[in-house]
Image (cartoon, rainbow, N blue to C red):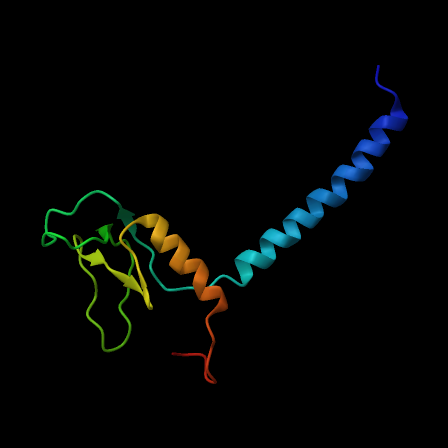
Length: 111
């Protein structure tokens, strides 16, 4: 049987690390920007795109609502940019999404 002293030390070290990890994840999630895109996207070449145009094809829109004054995206549309960042692949989209964390927010909260 294992020595109870080692078990206590193991638990005493592991529990605070797990709590710290949970707090860090919650902080990251709580401060993540929201662009309002909740849809299925793929990197597969689009059948509707013109030659030379690369973007992430929107495959499904379960409950996407367009911003006031904007047209609602349709299935098959390409997401070409997120702000000033091009999004030819999902990796570029993730990079552009993370760059929004450092984006300046003007008074009133909208750009």
